[in-house]
Amino acid sequence: MGLEHRDDQTVQMIYDIARNALRNEIRGEETTQNALIDMCRNNEEQYRRIIQAAENSGNLEIITTYARDGIVYNKTFVNRFTQPLQSTMPEPPSLTLSGEPSSSITGQSPNPLREIASSRLSDMGYAKQYYNDYMKDHNRIKWTDCYNDGLKLGFFKSYKNATSLKNTYNAQKDTN
Image 1 (cartoon, rainbow, N blue to C red):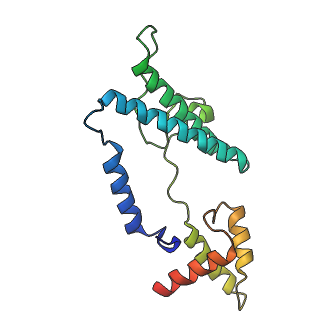
Image 2 (image 1 turned 90 degrees about the vertical axis):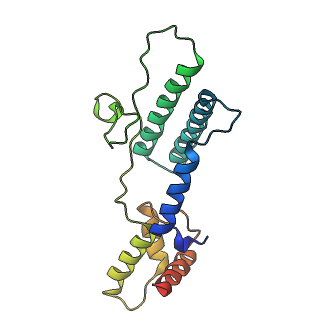
Image 3 (image 1 turned 90 degrees about the horizontal axis):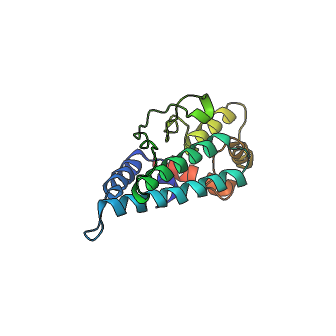
């Protein structure tokens, strides 16, 4: 599927449905306990990748904090099933997606995983806004400037260069 459909609401809904349907799939030979342990270990590895990517690409302190919270949550959950109950360690907190910051940010009791605000502008939304603002004062857009300005703000990470952004923008503009 092309990049032009990446932000399409219908495509995102289909992916969400598929992700939710497959998230809790357990094969007949697996027990619920083994499936949960495997899920937690896989999530822990993914959080490690998030931290590594955040650290390699600059100062992304909040993303790193989110990922570290996820590692702590998963370790606690895995230990609950793999270690005999020798300690008085409490069960991991129930997973809520309230969007409240964790103790590492606010000093309050931790909420292991948080939703990242979804009100962020999409890549094509930013490109459209940039295009409209730029064309008010100019006759022709400089896609390299749009691309570089967007990169500085965290957009266009899935685009190789300004030309791929321009082509996707124009293809999407032609379909609307």
